Image (cartoon, rainbow, N blue to C red; front, side, top):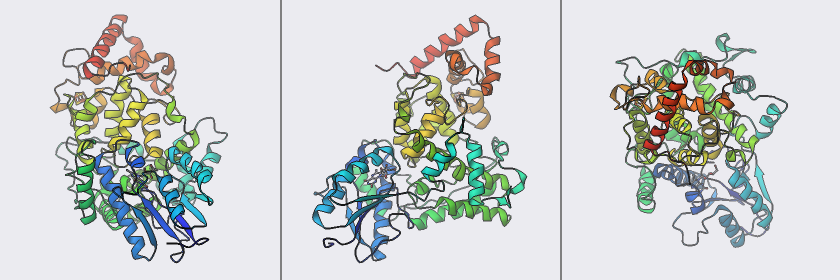
Length: 517
Ligand code: DLZ
Ligand code: SF4
């Protein structure tokens, strides 16, 4: 292909499908070759949901085709290629052995696992390996480190304000639009009876997607998830269709119902663009600017637009900064000593708990659930049960199409189960059934009674919640944000507390959250 001393070999990963990617910016179509590889090492480091495979492989193939059409030389290795070495490093070394290049160029990957692998590659490769920053993120790793240095406590709100200033998003001069940085308290409304969730356009699987669906169904039939309801954008045009539809039709009400949940309605008013954004089909800053235009033109109110922008330049950037700041050992922490197994119904959905059943079914059929379903239903239950962080992290990595470790780990390990002891969240997001009842229509159709704590039909969240606080009081009772529940707990008699402990213990066993061997 290339002659000795010529050109660069540019490796593009399955979540780097962006036109403006740093490793593609100076591509020379006459001399360079772009390498993309479907490999078993990436297909098996977690047992991905079937829809995640389809999303990534279909999007990789279409992105490669676009590059080809633009005149770029491609070396695209398919999963079924007999010469495939099935690791990314293996494919780079194979390409280097077959053709001469002066350098390998890659944009930094989204996971420690691969960052370390590329360091190994630099030792093994006969030519230099240049790893470039991933500037699709607004805040570079070094900028985040500089921001975090010397701060006693990392607070997402202060980081978010800095990002607002840095980008100029929703700023009027040096003041936040509307005179307020954050409208979160206006974004927690419960869905009133009769309020209809808007219908969604379906992205019909295109020809490449259909082809990949057939391959995945044949090759990974045992992996979690169904394929029939696949509804992901797999190229830039489709992704922008979804984003445009959201901005015009859903964003205006997104703010109000951001935290609400309803049976059979995984999308609600959510944009459903996280997977497309995380593999590079939508630029985060462009999406925020488009949302801001909707506000400036009077199409969407400030609380909705601010909420959307905050999720992206506040939270998304923040968790990515934390992931790299805390290093590869971050996931080994287990601040609450959680030591139980993940119940089987996280995979099967077979449980009488209507909320959990709905979220698992949604997850199975769409590789998606929205943030409150992930945090306050499945995450909250794992926290209260004391499920070991490895099992929780693995589940979230497997089941969601948008899960890459840089985003999954801080959200799960830190935010949902407090295994990092308070790096990401200032308190555990523990809640009883009353929270779920307030924010959803699940409890009305449930076999359990959300108002009961100790009876046979008592909602499992209730005893588990009080027992969680009781079990972890040494560690948590001084936390000011938990002062109210600890005050309530302190008013309970020893007998009440013993009854809660016994009920919680029975519940953990009944749900299959037994102690790990
Ligand atoms: C998720 C994924 C899968 C399933 N397969 C591939 C692959 O075969 N080749 C590839 O380049 N990327 C794949 N990916 C995405 C990578 O796992 C992702 O780039 C890293 O986890 C870093 O975030
Ligand atoms: Fe979930 Fe409890 Fe409500 Fe049932 S009663 S839906 S288990 S919160």
